[in-house]
Length: 203
Image: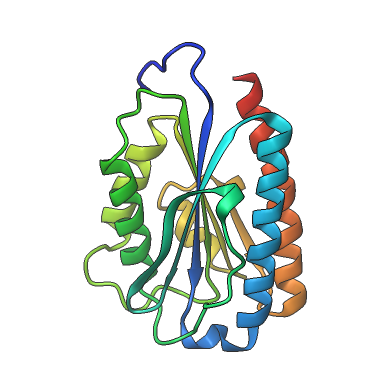
């Protein structure tokens, strides 16, 4: 059960982006940067429209997790111009580490919600700290607080792996690994932001 939040507290949204930076994303790196920059603009618009404080964190991952920045006010977020692809896909480790680190510093007393976007173009193939079971346990624990919405954009045929781990089917989407596919990801995510901010405004 989620802990009670203080009455009349300012609603704060902590939006976390995680981008796959494995070598196979090379042909899409420019487009991925563009899509991210456009989504940040959407976040700025939603934050202003609904009067909700919004902080953005950005990570990318291959065999290692790279932190670009954490909890930056959306009005101060810069365009993404240093996204570089590298090695394998240690997605479980990256997601597990990011969720754990944000959970550790949050006391769940204020009206704060977490919205996590994970974009990957391939299957997990390089994690050592987290496996499907341990990541599933963590995700279910966070979702039980009612403060976390965790979404994944995955290649066709990979959604069943994540739904078996406890990710609601509506939070897992499949995409085609092309520039057009990324444009569809942007459109879908932008629409999801509208729903998210509206839901937060009435709860």
